[in-house]
Length: 233
Ligand code: CDP
Ligand code: CDP
Figure 1: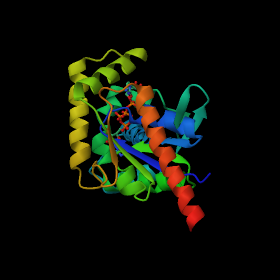
Figure 2: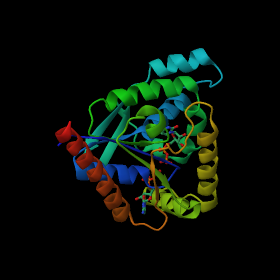
Figure 3: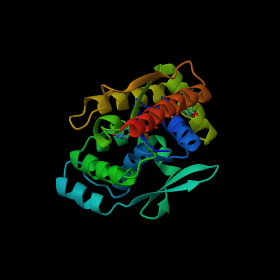
Figure 4: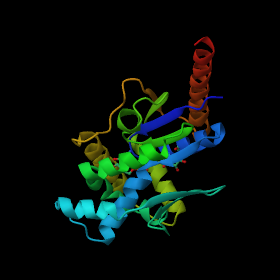
């Protein structure tokens, strides 16, 4: 069966990555977390005290960054920065607090988008992020735009952090989500926005299973459409 490309975009903590991962597993596709790449860049910039206003410094730093992923059967995907597993570190609040400012830099976006296109070259990919349907894969056969109520999103993120041993106040999480949504949606280069041909999914009152099931059905519909087009061509 011909494989398609799925782009899942939306605001922070709407369930994009959990959904994308599960949809990819059901379809036998590859899942790529583009947000993890921006988080890894942020970690490198923080560790190496890269000045965001110094273009040369930013470009030099980008040339020294190598991001790779490793799939662990039941444990999900680990992100590696220059050979080191940084999966735990990049999910911490200090990274969430700085990632949107760094992701707004044009040179950072150019470098990440080029790498994402390379990773998604062969179809059969589910990628989640902010600009996947608009910039990275504008021709993706299925585009999803996820939204959810801010309190629901913050509650889910708090639970997730708690399970990792990090106790964070709900108000701090809400403030971080709102701040990032604002920076991500208003930046000059590839801002977060719903692609004209994206399907909006509100996850506020859905279980993870329901939203995965809904998107898998949409994907199967697209795959069938492709198959029919190939037969009649
Ligand atoms: O998991 P969460 O939704 O909180 O964030 P993420 O997907 O890990 O992305 C972290 C940050 O990376 C976002 O707030 C954006 O600033 C940036 N990002 C981006 O600019 N473009 C993408 N395609 C993915 C993430
Ligand atoms: O990638 P994004 O930041 O959009 O969200 P996520 O990290 O996939 O989801 C945040 C948390 O919400 C995860 O712990 C999910 O399991 C949980 N969740 C969900 O995504 N959808 C639901 N309907 C219920 C819970």
